[in-house]
Each structure stands twice: as structure tokens, then as C-alpha cells.
Amino acid sequence: MQAGLRELAVQVSRIAEDAGKHALRDQLMPKDLVTLNTVQRDYSRGLKVDDRLSQFIYNRLTYIDPFKGRWEDRTDEWAPGDRYWCVGGVDGVINYSRSMAEWSVTISLFEFNEFGSAQPILGVIHAPALNLTYLAARQQGAIRMRKTPVGEKREKIMPSTVSHLDGSIVSFGMSYVPQEAQHALNVVASLAGKPADIKRIGPVSLDVCKVADGTYDAYFEPHLHERDVPAISAAAVVLWEAQGQLSTWEGGLIHWRSQNDLVATNGQIIQELQPYLINSDCGESYHHHEQKPAGQQ
Image 1 (tube, one colour):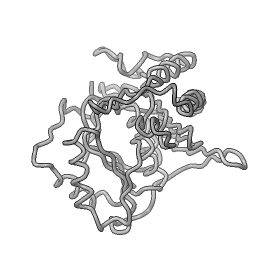
Image 2 (cartoon, one colour; image 1 turned 90 degrees about the horizontal axis):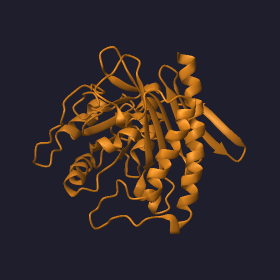
Image 3 (tube, helix red, strand yellow; image 1 turned 135 degrees about the vertical axis):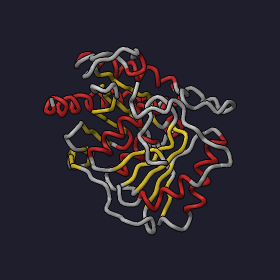
């Protein structure tokens, strides 16, 4: 089973690379881009390439193994061992639309256990414009692949060993919704002067992977939505397998069917960081919906 997962991750990474070539080609051809809806500030499905990309990936995945289908098409009926593909479009749609390099293609695989809890067990994040791929499978560690002038470099990754918030490098994400963005900025304001630097680059998939490989010591973002599940679930496997930590701001499990205030860390600085997160409310109570453990369906 485990050897199969490792080989499956490699096959999935090849599909992500092929899909990435198509998306990168479209990015370099502005006439193929659809103008983002800046009036309604709806960037979640802002590109014509998004649907084509996810459909291309899923079609290719079915040739490897269709399993039970797509994660978003699952029913209330399940059996232990049931697996579902979770495929995203472009993660980092604004970066993509503005010809920035920080965007990715994400693929994960969910599996139900005997308790009816579904968790991601395989994750691939491919950043075509960066020549960078992260892949991980349950109990197999996490790998970063980089294309360099002297060939492809593959290396096992692990988080940093920074043990204090002072002097750390922290990244954050925020929504385009004003009230949700303010929540993130409140944390940034309260943290100012503690970390050596606070980065805002995105997207979430790459930011979490940068915690996994030690580039960042922590990453946080409030109000991640169900539409973010493909990116978060793929990156979660990479972080877990690299021995990093992922949780809600309160320290709970990720809810795969509702909003999440998410924090990823190297496991060393979470105790110092957490008070800044949970004491940063904008004045309105923020409640999760469908309070079930991660993957509980």
C-alpha cells in the first residue's frame, strides 16, 4: 500500500507538470486571460483557464485510477478505504493574472477511515513558473523537486529549527473580502517588531510548503473557505510528512467542509504565535460552521 502511494505521487506529479505547461503557456498569452471581476471583487474563478485545467487533470488521473471520483462529488455514503481525487484550478489566481511566478497547480487524494473521517493522504503542488514541485504521500516523507541549469534536484525537506518568534520569518495570507482581510491585518499589526520579517506573497499552497521546507517558520491566514480545500489539502500532506504542524488558530483540526482560520508552523514557535492569533478578533465573533473534526462527513 505504501509503496503504491509513493509511485502514485510520482505519477500525479507528472500530470501536474503537464497541466502546468498548458497553464503557463496561457499565462504568457494575455489574450487568453479573462478580466477579473474587480467590481464584485470575485477572484475565486477569475480565469477561463481554471475549469479547463482542472478537467484536464482529472481526466488524466482517471487513467491512473478513478477511485470513487471527485472529492466535491462525493455522497453521504462511504466505506473505509474509499478514495477521492481533489483537484484545484490555479491557486494564486491574482498572481497568475498579473504575470507573477507565484502560482500553482494542486492535486490531493482523500481517503476515508473506519470512523468515517476522510483525510488527504497524497499531495502534489507544482509551480510551473518557478520550476518547482512539492510532493508527499502518507508515511513516505516530503520531497521538493527543482529544475536547475545542471538538471533536476530532488531533496527531502523538513521545517526550520527556529524556536522563538523573535527573529523568525512569518508569512500570511488574506481574503479579498474587506472584513476578512482586516482580521489578518490585525494579527500583522500586533506581531510587528517580533519576527525579522512578515511576508505576503501567496498562494496558500506554496506558503504552507515553504513552512515545510524551512523557508518560513510559520504561515497564517483567517477565513479560508471550502474552495481552498484543494490547495490546503495538498499542502497539508507535504507539511505533515515534513514533520511540520497544521491546525486552526485555536489548535483544533482542519475542517474540510467549512471555513478555517489556518496556521502552519515548524512546530517550534506555535505557542508564542498562537496568542497573537486568537486575540486578534475584529470585534465580531467568528464562528466555524459544521464543527466536525477534519474530514468528518
